[in-house]
Image 1 (tube, rainbow, N blue to C red):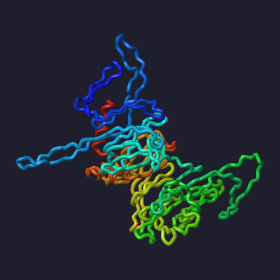
Image 2 (image 1 turned 180 degrees about the vertical axis):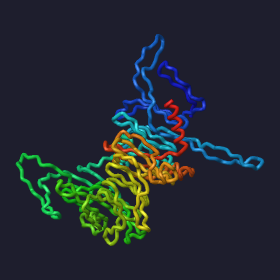
Image 3 (image 1 turned 60 degrees about the vertical axis):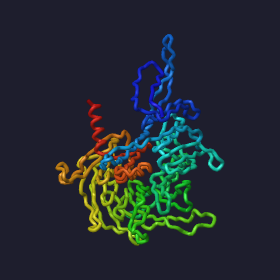
Image 4 (image 1 turned 45 degrees about the vertical axis):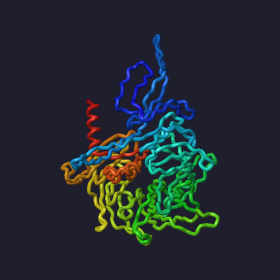
Length: 550
């Protein structure tokens, strides 16, 4: 370690840092595919400073030599914090005196080259990170919290571990590892692209079978026009045209199972839909079943709707699928799983969304919402409610159901399983063009998220004790923000502290596990997340915003 000093590349004045600042590591290296981008990195106290060297031509004064470069500070998003533990040493009088002992922070910058084709710097310490500079020239930091703190790091190239690395964790264990070569690290998150060669629409994971269920579609040529013979019978009118006639195309939907490690489709594990039948929703739902010891079992719920001509009314289906184990073929051990249809119910209206609530299946059939009990491979309706308009999106959390229709508003429903009743408890009185709905969970507090066609994100709350809610009949808007892009999908993931944070036994990390992150996907291919922050951080940001506006 050494005391901080100042290195100036030009005659401009630079503010001298505090004499208490300690430089714990310093490195200057060339990053990028060919090492053509000079970077200066340093760990000062609990901060990581990254500077990029750029050309800066300037006029040299007589008798003075100046370096024709400037170092520009780079944003990386890596936060290094000092852990503090409160100890109570005993004095000579026998009384306890509280004292804060600071655990020294150790961090080392270790450059690496050609680890699975990547080059950069690895940051050791309690918060290990990979700093990678890709071909696009942008610096990306990827955390590695899977094994806690990292004491030391080095590259390792061996016949059994080609282009790998080794490190010691906080327990003093030596790890010999490799980076997955199929991932691309030149992004904000490591990305692995799977060439499906078709269009994916929905995806779900079944933990019991350890497979992914994916709904796909591919175009096909339409050479038949459906028409109505009478009220119930339909027929196909095949039209023959000239060879140069451009026939219209439609999407052919089907469901496939994929292995999570290699992303290879399982043979003989697909479900094809009929022509003109589109899948509107697919989810992995947990329903009550007597086959499981716990009384709950995961199934695949699929909702469909027909897209035919204007003369033919659209119909829909609700299909419940199960993954069963069968005797595999001798030459194909992957054929030990098979898709079995355990429930199939048809409707005279399109089914737009499905989910599970309290062990029952819920679905939106046009403007109606049905709740079915799944028993003996039959879907028996136990509750329903009629809303105003066509419902296209719903989200379920415990016995709360948050729905959105095509042009009016959002509503909050509640299902009482003991009484088998479904009722509306609150709604938004203002009309919005909602795209998707979801929940924001922060411990014992619950919020409701809705996105619209103007790229806005609105967060509601249900507070019957406030007079503005009219006894809880109105949802109150607590947050409005504009994302700049249209959001069409929302899903939740529970927050989880890293191994280093969990080992500290701090009470704030226990409350973190009760919080959930709401991820969203946009129509232009972006992914983001919404995370609630504590009240103290909110007030600090609010004060900062007030000062900036003034």
